[in-house]
Image (cartoon, rainbow, N blue to C red; front, side, top):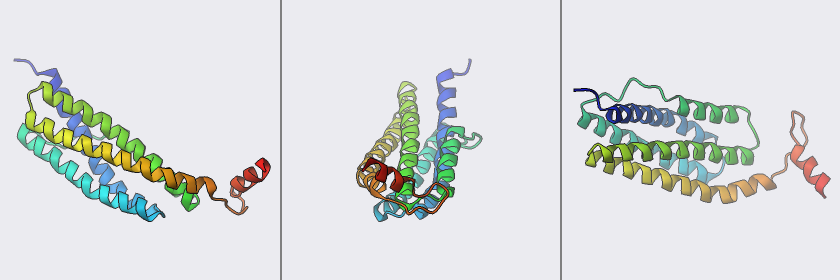
Length: 183
């Protein structure tokens, strides 16, 4: 009997998500540390705990499948995290960094939402009811996190828009010059 191609894809995608969650587990504390807005920092810390649960759910699914979660590197998450790390290393003004951190986090959430939506559908088609339920639970949490980030962005982005840096070279002060030019 041949290999069910959807089941093969399902397992590969689960491995990808498992690696993605573990990469994000390492990045979230750095994002929390870089955030200056207290509610953003708290949101990252809360999502860190939630992400641990996401990885545990995936481990439970792998155990039920008799498969190992190891063996795949999620290049998509690797790229998203690298972009976020580059932004942090550029050391922008705190308001700009907070807005950028939200953007980076939402990109991660959208990536995860797409991944969990697909594997939940695969689980349904493969008759993996318990796995589907666990995956949909994670999917709902990822969507909720995205919604919270959007709410945070409403005031964080406004603070970034209103922030003006003194002219200190290296491109600093551009916001102030642009604002003065508009006046």
